[in-house]
Length: 514
Ligand code: XMP
Image (cartoon, rainbow, N blue to C red; front, top):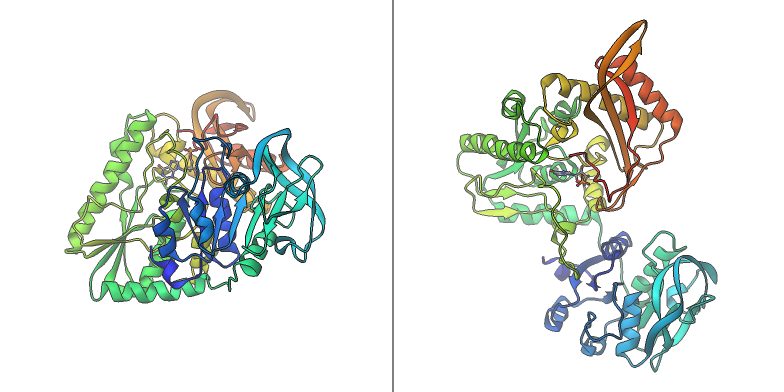
């Protein structure tokens, strides 16, 4: 990535804590470009990036133990401001000659904290407030040159500074929204300590990216697999602006989209100047899925069939020079900690490098976080409903129909899911609940309709709140909203006579049912 050459850049050094991406997102929210790199990044590489500031993240270890993640002391000799957060403040204190040890009382959660307002971090902010703590170690002796600038009842060094060398630390997590004025504290570090000017905006990004794509592509042909999800839609809009009719988007409609979704995607791109190809392959996919009920087999069949259809269409276009992928920054970040285990074989329609012959891949969203992708989409004039679309899995409704998939079940689920989503939107909860959908179970149960007995399907509703989709809580949807959805569904969708609400968190459940 070369963005650090064109923008003031802050480097977030990842020591394996759970909020590391959040720190980077907050820095970007402040209008400052930043990159997350492993704490193992060689000093030479750091120097090449010429960061205007460095942030050490939190992490699960104890800074005074030998095998904990460390960094060379030379980093403090570069003349660059450093902010240590949680483990980061411990590491700074430890490396610069202070002492870190196990705290008598560990602190967790919202903690009343007093700040010294003359410290640049707290400039212009109230002297008392709540901070979000999560630590079992603490600093019991400051390094030379430092003073404590915040404390709590149990923690004498809740923040520290050495303004002469521009070194700062916070024991608490300013990036977490539970810390009052946390964003303002980060803003202070960026603008008052590092001298940031706020040169990172999505308008500016669109402009430079369009120009650089144009230059790279020349008169070449570009191909993009459009799923209708936020990332591929924004990538398509950007490419359409850059190269117009040299871009072909292939939208494989596998017939397992939500109600009206295929038509909505088509409406958004039909007249955008690109070549838009919609392949209605519903019958083909359902044919392949007939009689299959194992979740992983369903996923594999859809993934493979998707590539076949895409390949067939791409061949019709002839030679392609560039393939666009909708990779975004969270997929790119090398974490200081290890990789997560694979629970489900995810299918993404962002890129299909093996399927088509091409010269190079273009990844126009590679440096962006999801919220930035959305901002960019709005900047490019995409409609709200596309930009704010909740995540939708590549295999679509196939993994929300438990057991065998039939055309009847697909339309039952489309209708029921549409009603549920409509009720959520009417209640104004569509941004608050991060993902919500219906699942058609393979359980039939007895009901009574009028004077007659029914033996129909039970439908499950799922709504979750989450920051990263790695963990999630079930959304506390008000009973009235659930009740309205339930009665509209059982009265309006023939074949469903029971509605239940899923109240499990992830883990131990996953968000999708398959
Ligand atoms: P799980 O069910 O693993 O889902 O908790 C986490 C998030 O990923 C989405 N998901 C997928 N997204 N292709 C995708 O692009 C897939 O195959 C896929 N499977 C699950 C899911 O909707 C949730 O947002």
